[in-house]
Amino acid sequence: MGVNKRINKEIQNMMRDNDLMRNQFCIELVNDSNEHLIGKILGVPDTPFQRGVFRIDITIPNKYPFKPPVCKFLTKIWHPNISSATGAICLDILKDQWAAAMTIESVLKSLQSFLSSPEPSDPQDAVVANQYTTDRAMYNMTAKYWTYCYAMSEDSRKNYDTNDFRVFQEKIERVRGATKGGSHERALTALSCNHWDVDKALKSWSNH
Image (cartoon, rainbow, N blue to C red; front, side, top):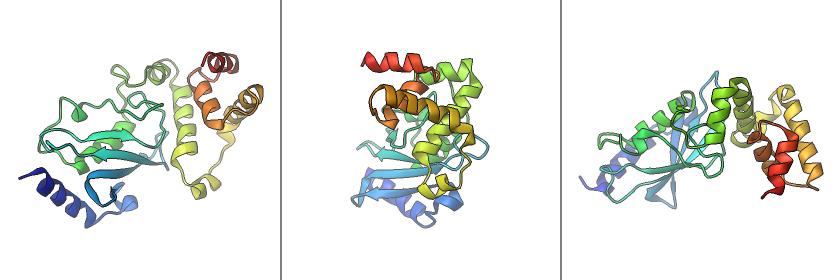
């Protein structure tokens, strides 16, 4: 079975019940192409990612299913095995543990499960992995705030209790003020990468 027939069959099967809220995942085609998809997964309940919707860019290679799809997170996320800067993913089934029997659906399910079971010993983002292993509470709160900022809809944020984030938000405003109006995203990244130490965040800012 050629790549087009194989991926067409997978897409047809998924489109029969392509409901994000019911299935925890869904797909959409990019420009009606069967070789470029956007996957969406829901954050797992009782994790820092709950209530988030995470978008994943999926490119189907010519040798699929004998080669894995090329995937990266489009939604910014704080996770040891996903680059906080580029969305690159370090997951074995997308590399040497891929098998031709796997499907796009199984990839999306694996990625959703992966959110709640990081592998800090084999990180994609060393800074996040270090925080995960040395200060789990800080990691959980940072990941939760990134989910709030980047993975939630405006309606979801309206109904969210942000009291837990008050200290984070105050520090972000301090950094933005000190940098004369630096962006929220850059301030958030600088603070997250420096364990929410304002002085270290500002130093890293000036070094870039």
